[in-house]
Amino acid sequence: MTEFDPAGHRMVPQQRWFEDFVLGERFVIPSRTQTSAVFAAFQTASGDTHPVHYDVEYCRARGMPNLLAHGFQTLVHTAPGAGLFPYIVEESLVGFLEQSSRFLKPVYANDTIYPALEVTELVPGRTTGVVTLRSTVFNQRRELVLEGLQKFLIRRRP
Image (tube, rainbow, N blue to C red; front, side):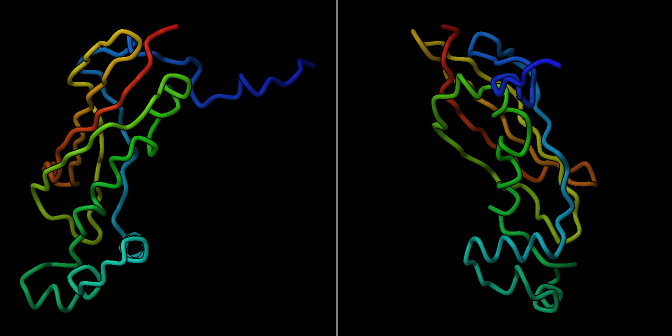
């Protein structure tokens, strides 16, 4: 029997550094159906108590088919930690620098969303580099409901 080494207990087999990223590379984040439980959890975490997010009859009276997801409720699913990205940069990640997003279409209760991140820009520095990821969220109807960007400062290979 071999001895256990905690350093070998990784979600991904190999650490990556700034130089290892490639333009166009995609990081898929698991899909999620926006259930009433997701709405309730987001309402609790955000403190947003507007009825458009929790009262289906209020929504229907205003022409919406169901509860309307808060924009940040959709955005939160693009968090890199929901996928493998933070595991591949465990040793090289310096910090999260920037985030922006545009909300293009509504997300309603029971919609299923499909988030992903794609490398769109690599700006090298002396000891680090900035990796820009385009964030996208599609719904089950193949409509782009959110797009944005996230920037991370990543160490170069030692």
